[in-house]
Length: 155
Length: 72
Image (cartoon, rainbow over all chains, first blue to last red):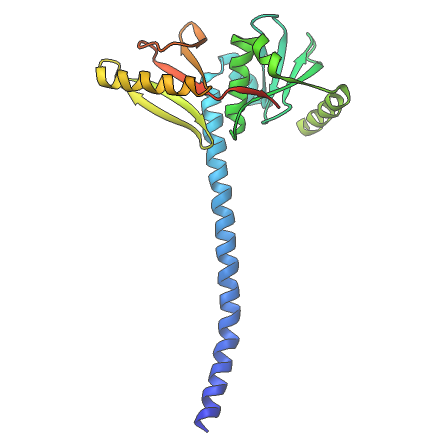
């Protein structure tokens, strides 16, 4: 009799325990995902803060409004548009702001977007030719696709 | 108070130091040399704008270090 009661009690406890343990695992997984997401957000924000500190007032206004800013190459006086991102985010543009060529160079290692954009800005404004010497040029069809994507995102 | 800012995976790391303190200046110079020898570019920002430098300037108030550039 006692054995039957204990066995039934064990089954009841298992019936309650298993869903609880499953839920606890799910909550832990969600908590880890949230921590990773929040951590990423803090890093991104630090990068953006640093970038904004080093932008000129005009570039800062442009970046705040459009998520990109323009720089003038120190050697050629060409105009480049640096868009928010960590790769293939530099377009050489004409007077009307239309992309002519895409350039891709980045600081080595894993850095957040704000840091990458700041390094790109400083490189183009202080040592443009050295930056372009290591850069890869984007194929024209990729440039067209990117321009369409950026226009699409703007709306 | 001067600052050396080093870009890293957390966004950046900042080392503040007193330019009137000889020991702090010496540490800052050692950091500068270690980073630039390791391929980092040093950029100094002042009222005149941003300049890239290859030698330690004890009067620089704000120096930013970023890793060498590579084709993306």
